[in-house]
Length: 169
Image 1: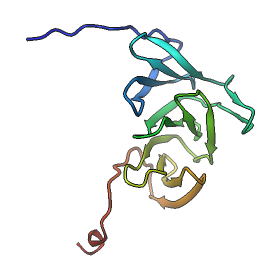
Image 2: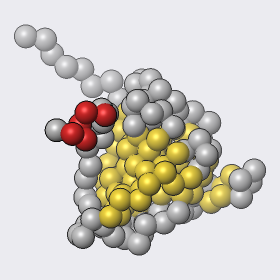
Image 3: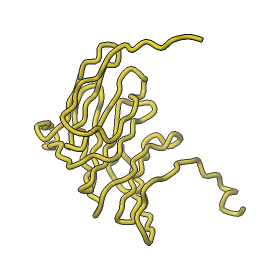
């Protein structure tokens, strides 16, 4: 049997790590923390290459990354984009390659427990929250495609392709 080798230890412990995801190309790890911070790690070196916190500001878009307790994160499957969802309802779309905050999407009324990207419709994303709402977004146009409502909180979702005949089965 083979043996595993530890290539690096990631040392950014300011608060509890709540979630993480791989970047679209598998070279970086994106981790989120209870403090509202996000770190983009270069796996080979163990170095933080980008850090998102209350100090992260995009002057072109006049956006400040400010979240309290990030509880969900997802990376786009073919672009250097990731989404974060926080306990206070904030949703941010960020770039893992250049360290920019692209967009702050409208808030949920509760914690955002799930964020994800659609693999077939590459510009679509979904956010789900304890407010019982699921927003389907067109991230290219920063607009809501649909709002789905549930009588209780939504804590997770499964994204799949829906075929026309699914409506009749």
